[in-house]
Each structure stands twice: as C-alpha cells, then as structure tokens.
Figure 1 (cartoon, rainbow, N blue to C red):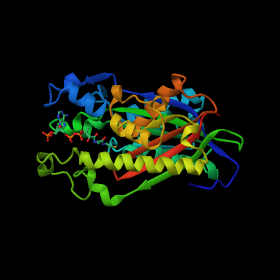
Figure 2 (cartoon, rainbow, N blue to C red):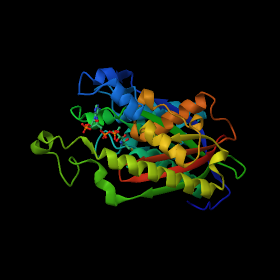
Figure 3 (tube, rainbow, N blue to C red):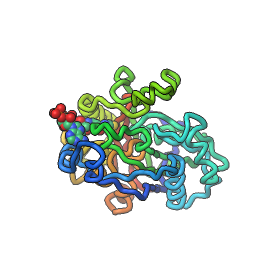
Figure 4 (cartoon, protein in one colour):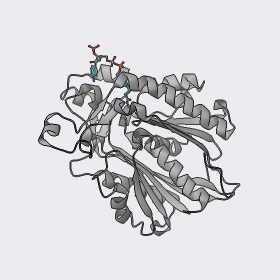
Length: 335
Ligand SMILES: CC(C)(COP(=O)(O)OP(=O)(O)OC[C@H]1O[C@@H](n2cnc3c(N)ncnc32)[C@H](O)[C@@H]1OP(=O)(O)O)[C@@H](O)C(=O)NCCC(=O)NCCS
C-alpha cells in the first residue's frame, strides 16, 4: 500500500456499467454442450450470462460503461487525465484497448493503457489509478474492467464455457481532500509459479497463431478448475484480512462485500472464513456469470443503485484470477 505523499484521498465519484443485449441461459447452453441447468446452478450459482454480438468489441462495451460513469460523476471527458482498462480480451494485441476507448469517449487529455491481471484486473487498475491520484499525477482518472470472454471460450468444453459472460464496468476516480471518503486501503498479490492454472496457450509471442494452434484449440481459455477453486478461497480470504488490517477496521465494520463473481460456493467459503454473513455479500453472478475484470464494477454498481451501499459505509472489494493474482480494496463510500 502506498503511503500518501499528500493529504489527498482517491474518491469514486461516478460508476457505470454496460452488458450486451443477448442473454444465454443454462438451458440454451445445454443445447450446445453436454450440461444442464441443475449442474450449473448447483455447482456455480450461475443461471444466465450476457454474450456480445459478433461485431461488438471489448472497447465498444468499455466505452459504453465509461460514458455511463462520466455521466454519473458529472465529469467532462477532457478532465480525465488517466484511463486504465483492465482486460484479458483486448480488441487486439496492439494497440491497447484503452487507446481505442479514448476517442470513443473524447478523453483527449488522458494517458491510456491496459493492464492484464484477469479477474483481479479491476482492483489492480483501481490501485494504479489511486496511486496516480495520491501522488498528484492525475486529478481525475477512469478505471474500466471490460471483457468479451465469449471470444476466447471453447464452446466444446463444458468445464469452462458455462462459467463466463461478457460485460463492462467503469468508475471515475478523483482527488478529495484529507477529510473526504474514498479508498482507505489496498492489498495486492501474485504467484506466477501457478501461471499454468488458468491460461490461453497460443496467440502470444511464445506460441504465435498457426494452423496447428487453431486445430489444437489453443486460442481458448483452459483452466485447472479444482486447483483454482482452492487457491481462490485461500487467496481471497488472506488478502481481505490484509486490506482490513491496513484499513484498521474489522470485518464486522463492513456494510457490504463485493467479491469477484466466480462461483457462489467460492464466495460463501470466503465469507465464512471472514465471519461475514451472506446478507452482506453482493451477488449477481446468477445473471452475469463470471465476467472477469468486469465482475466487481458490475456488482458494485448494482449494489449502489439498489441502495445497499450508502455514503459513509465501509465496503470491501476482493478479487482473484489468472496469474495467479489477487487483490482487495477497502473503501469508505461517498465523496
Ligand atoms: C468448475 C467448477 C464449478 C466445477 O465444480 P466441481 O464441484 O469442482 O466439479 P468437478 O470438477 O468435481 O466435476 C464434477 C463432474 O461434473 C462434470 N462436469 C464438468 N462441467 C460440467 C458441466 N458444465 N455440466 C455437467 N457436468 C460437468 C465433470 O466432468 C465431472 O464429471 P466426472 O465426475 O464424471 O469426472 C468449480 O471447480 C469451480 O468453480 N472452479 C473455479 C473456476 C473458476 O471460477 N475460475 C475462475 C476463477 S477467477
């Protein structure tokens, strides 16, 4: 965690989301692969997910969420100094998706780049933007988590294609004075020795695209699901405890927890470890599935809009993903 150089805080002043129109239910999936609604619902908690239209890109979704966040913040696009897009489903290897979002939103004064931390991407990007704000390098920043997971799913692999969905969520972050609410603490971690647990093997410089990589289905996500499950529970519980300790609050002080929406069983195991009742845990994976970097802002926006999170409330965001990566953020909500 960065020790602030100034008495500034980084405050979330606006939030917006966007999901594609098309909904794919578990029953729809059972017509594509050998699965059924009962298995998916009981093992994951997911009932349906949104799937982008063929011509709809990650940057399109990111821009729509970003536009909603700008409206929510009442911010002028020219005021945004920094745009960080977290994604593992960038429109292209280069340029960055953030550079494609910039003209769509008119962020003419923003420095733009992507970060790759998979399902932890949003909390990682929020931490980066916060540090720009605390050092005075940016006055207003936009952080977006956006994914077109449907583009990298193997629709013949029932172990993975039932889990994910598409969508985007964005926040505007700005400097507040020392008395302001905002991000209280952040804690991040990684373990690259477990990089093989969730991966897309081909298409990068280690294994460039070829006829063989396409035939071998190596451009799709592959995951060692059982090891991921156990690592996710341990990683998210430990990093949450660290962020709470840095914030100087107890789990009982939290009004809400907004976890990465991977699997309801993973989430309830973490809640149990942290002694947090499930009615404080924000869940929307039944309608969106795992949207990777978009999952936390999608759930956060819904909780704020529904009045579950009010000014002054302490909340915890916590995520886990490929890398492996994990991260947690304690926020006192409000400006
Ligand atoms: C994927 C996951 C839901 C599987 O749940 P599980 O209880 O561990 O299930 P198992 O892996 O033990 O599989 C049980 C059986 O269901 C089968 N199965 C797998 N996917 C299936 C599907 N979509 N429909 C029906 N059956 C399926 C398996 O083949 C296995 O069959 P078998 O016993 O005959 O071999 C769970 O491991 C999980 O959520 N892992 C984490 C994945 C994740 O969220 N990753 C992202 C983290 S950021």
